[in-house]
Amino acid sequence: MKVHKLYVRDEYLEMIKSGEKRIEVRVAYPQLKGIKPKDKILFNNEVPAEVISVKKYETFRQVLREEPIEKIFPDKPSFEQAVKRFHNMYPKWKENRYGVIAIKFRLLKPRRE
Image (cartoon, rainbow, N blue to C red):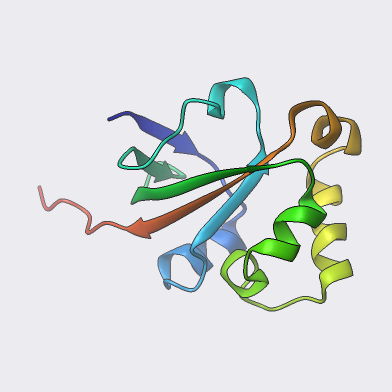
């Protein structure tokens, strides 16, 4: 079991905290290749989660066709708007070079000190 630190924009962190966002989609960088079920994620050093599943895709379009958009973007953009959001975050060459991963997760209760 490994802990992965992932950083998301504030608006997405709020969606994760509220429980609306349940799938994190990223370019499949080499450092993310080892992520697997039962691993932990710490979003922005404050929100703990457990990986349920990890699925590899070739493109963002493929992810959006196979995964529920509202679990990735709870504000429910159109298919094309969702693709555009990904391309605003990641250059197309990175998507083509590394592929894409969809990480399904569940929130964990933060530990009380």
